[in-house]
Image 1: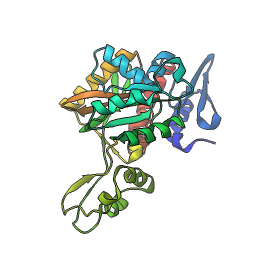
Image 2: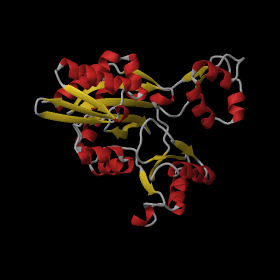
Image 3: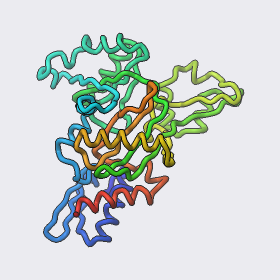
Image 4: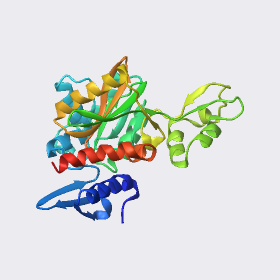
Length: 311
């Protein structure tokens, strides 16, 4: 059975293999793909087609390690600090201590973002401004993950994703967060219910208190419904037109990829505090949400990567 969340990725790989006379064997519910062309045998797992080295893959997927590597290379990036769960923290004394986390909260009055140190799609990502919120977020994350990363909360004005292959930008798009316009009659909750699905509404209710959700925005006033820019949280992909912004994002993404020595990746670039910075680098290039809107573009990107796999 093919995983629904991987349908576009798998269907594209299958089409490529059929077109190039490559035998394909899909295993583990679609998580593992075994490809063979003559004596050549290639593997893809998750959303990784196998172009990246094991070290580049691991560093990119480790948010704290990625931020450290970028910082040492002089690439502007949002800092992430690693904290380990109880099982791993004995290996790095103090790395799992709440007392080590609290100074970060004091140093950043706008708050912190707490997230699994490895993972995608914005799952279990929390903005915290108090000790109680921090403790709750840490407990929830470490109940399911071996480690977490903490970064300062910054007001992100724009977020752009650059899909790179060997230093060439294949796709560049911004993530437009969901928003509503007040009509002076309906509450924020009612406006959000009209604009978003049930899954995205769950995220919104975590970000707004009941009073804010029940308040009626003035007519004509725009309200952003989510501080996250994740496509899985309701943001919409918008292709970025040629221009200075696109060029700046590509240039920074390429610098990040070179620092990590990664070949095929999606790089998230954010504009915050009056400058562009790297937020994350993803070794597994997931384009399911983008593919529903721009299927030909996504197919072309995966095909370009597969050409490299079998070169």
